[in-house]
Amino acid sequence: MKVRMTKPPEGIILSPEEKWKYANFTNSFIFGKALTVNTELVKEIIRFSVPDLQIADISIAERERRQEPSALSKASILDIRAELTDGKIIMIEMQVLKRDDFILRLRSYRSQYDTESLKPGHRFGELHEVIQIAICCFDPVGDDAYIYDYQMTDRYSGNILYQNKQRMILLNAAGHQGRISKDLKEFLTYVSGGEAEGAFVEKLDETVRQLKYDELARGEFMRLEDWADDRSYEAKLEGIREGKLEERKISVRTLFKTCLDLGLGETEAIGRIAETYQLSAEEIKSILREQ
Image (cartoon, rainbow, N blue to C red; front, top):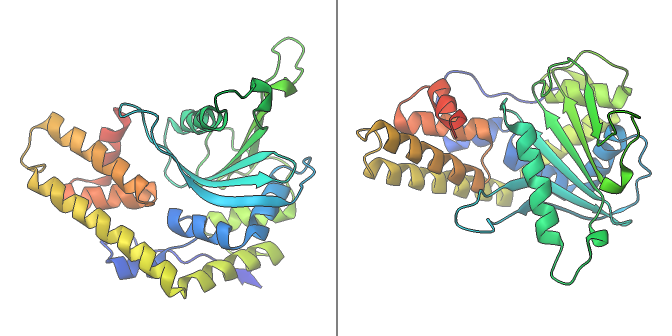
């Protein structure tokens, strides 16, 4: 049986109820919920993203919210952190909006995890092996490959520095090149919005469908929308629309960060901010790129 994600209509402003109706697996809230309520999905994503990894069982699969180490540092929200019973840490991210700094953001996530997990008195040898998996709706590198798999290597011998204990895997839903498993191909087709088939995507689509009938999940989603609305209203009271250009830019960046902290996806956040400030999505993206 072939399945396809629901997609919101383009070019119109959606109410919170309509956003919930059209929210799909690429939505940050739905993505995090689906993978935490069904950890078998997490295991399958790991299995076909890192086929050479002997997967132990998962002891933890959770959406992790991190706090800034200081008031001047950037906060980050990790979509999913899975801890395997052998101690390996798997970070899984969904990235819909193309950003030039996305790879650096992944670096920041990993660095913050290392900093927070190594407590005073611990030795550096206690750092966990970390594998980052990023599911991208765009090509994050530009070589048109389905999958990119990076580890630190020596430029002369090509030997991998395994002692580094880190690896980054980028899944490209817009890719066309390379040999990958049928499961991964169908998954990337599903993420890109096409018709896909197979046991995994059917299970994934069914998990999302059942989640959409969950009133508790719907209520949480609506509360996030309400909070974002409140922040938008506060921004208006500060005179954002009438303010000077630099003041507006600062406020746009602040509200964008707030939307992410509340669990909204980047595309949703940009749409909401564009509506609030009566700017185009491209204008909002341009302001954010200036950071």
